[in-house]
Amino acid sequence: METTKSKKFTQSLTFKSFIIGALVLLLLIPQSMILNLIDERKDRSLETIETINNKWSDSQTLCGPILSIPYLKTKTETEMIETKENKTEKREKITYESHILHIAPEQLNIKTQLFPEEKHYGIYKTILYKSDINISGTFRILSEEDTAKYNFQWDKAYLTLGLSDLKGVSSQVDFKFDNSPLDIEAGGSYYDNEKQLIMAIPGLKELYEKGAFTFQGRINLNGSSSIGFIPVGKNTQVEVAGDWKSPGFIGSFSPDSHIGESFTANWNILHFNRNIPEVWTDAYSYDSFNDSYFGVNLVDTVDHYQQNTRSAKYALMFIALTFVVFFFVEILTKKKIHPLQYLLVGIALILFYSLLLSISEQINFTIAYLIASIATIGLITAYTYSIFKNKTQTGILAALLCGLYIFLFVILQLEDIALLIGSIGLFVILGVIMFVSRKINFYKQDDANSDENREIS
Image (cartoon, rainbow, N blue to C red; front, side):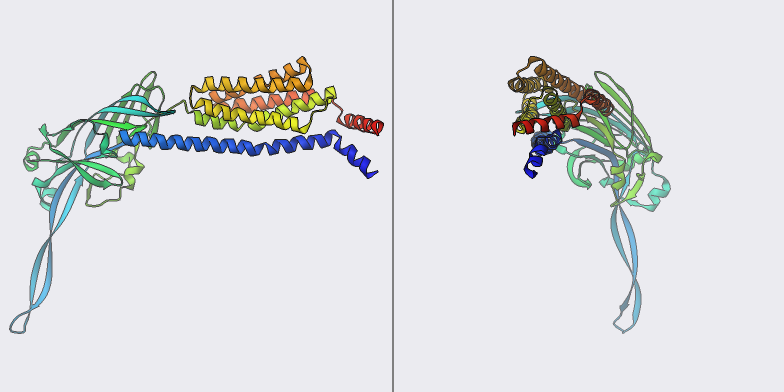
């Protein structure tokens, strides 16, 4: 009796449903392996791109120029000294401490023209650029109170222009202070990982006496992926233009921009928009400099690794819907489909994502998607026909798979409303499944199966 009940249960649709559900969960393991493989290939791509960028130049950040004037501070100390007559005398000891006064520009104007290009290294691609940067502005005139307070060493004054990667300087830097050319040297780190160009300013005292604190310069800079700026000026105006269809604006400030086949972006940042001092002495916490960073990121809209990841997340939906169709065909036609056959179809669906990843690394993602989907649909359709032996049923399954893959491709193209379209699509699919299954009497099917078992026994 118990054997008969056990056999009855194993032949029931309820048991088959559990088996199919278990297979779906089992196939989540290879799905996670595919997702890990995509992440691994993406990391490999990033490492290769970093290698390319290091040879050319990393993303650039420009800070400055900043006027730096060394000065000496007199320090008088009183000390008690014993004389030869065993008396104690007070004597003053004068020492000099060296300091540097850093002055940010009163007005800072930066105009940048970018020339982006794509570079390939094997199957990997990165975005590099050349740039033509024009810098101009003014420093505030030092007051008589300032000059009286500080014992300036005018002959040691200099300008510093911070760059994140000096390797990107591609030609001789042309910089002038009050129309006087400056000699330029490379210096060490002065602000986090920023390197600096140091420009000595001869005759600064005479320029100060004339009230001339203007500067202008031009620099050709190579970089990769993005270019950024630090608004050290009391009033900073930055314009960036370039031939790129999809720029991203990054950092703490948004520009007025125009985007078409090329783009133009303008920033106008005032001193109360950011937390950077106009004057400071010696070392300073530059965290506020980083907080005020802004710039342009040259976005690669064709990120096939991101598209592969997004598509692989829909694997569960593809497997579940395909299995549901198989299950309904099995109920309606009373044709038994073995769990192993379900499993093989599920593995074929998973292999689609491996095909898509490997092919999209070689060619355009859209073409790769077309090839991988046709191959998968063809394989499953041929295998399904060998099971069903019915062109209509096989055609229905093939049409379903075509619809699913078209639906997935549409979702991958709609970045902003992908969630909305995906949710609506799944809701409609669920509604269709509920509509098809409304007239199926699953209990009757189980009873019919048990009657068949009794007849056989």
